[in-house]
Length: 302
Image (cartoon, rainbow, N blue to C red):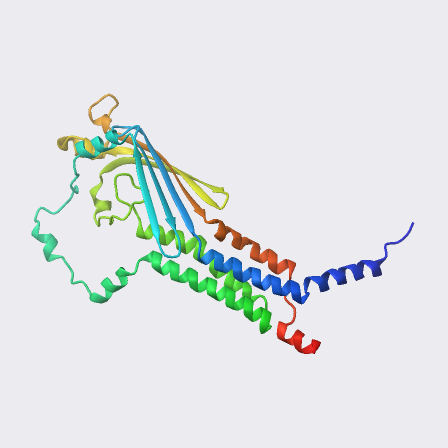
């Protein structure tokens, strides 16, 4: 029985290692990294889709579909409503609900107003999405700069990890949160995606005895959240009965029980194909590890 030739296997491994560090392969890696990063910066970044259907209550079976696309410059939002007549009838027949412990003196609101600072208004003029776009462009520029410095200057290749993590954080965390921050009502039926959230939303209590559930799942290039929401809409309850409904759910078969509304929905967040393609960068770095900078190799060849 022959023993394995360790010298031959070491030689093969040495040839593979030298090929992986060949200057031509290193040049190709650097060019591909820069092209992939630049392509991601100029393509669509995020696709957010909301699909919700009322399954119980006055607005059922109205269905709302909202789609948003985000790139390096624009945010496009499209909203469509199926069986819209039931939904608009629901909006018309419901009443606005006053805060349970609201102030009786309307002058109180004016006396409590605080002066607005010009600097704060200037900061608010820059949307969170604009800040996220700047972060993404900066992180991609940093990643390309580090890759070029690894190739031509010979800095430690582990610095590429910093640039790559900065890009991941910008796309996976900062961008979705910034979109939600600028469009808090995107997944809220009956509200415009760009409308502002009212300051007294927590105090109004339009819905009582609420139940909320959600399930998070991964999908190709993103993730999806399945949700359901139910509760009794006080805007559909007679004003004299609202205090009682706040305390206890109405009995089935009563008029107030018709205020029950349930919405089943799903919210999916998908990243653009060019953004998903960034995942091949670590593979390129493994296939072609960095060796000496190109300039030193050229000098030695001379």
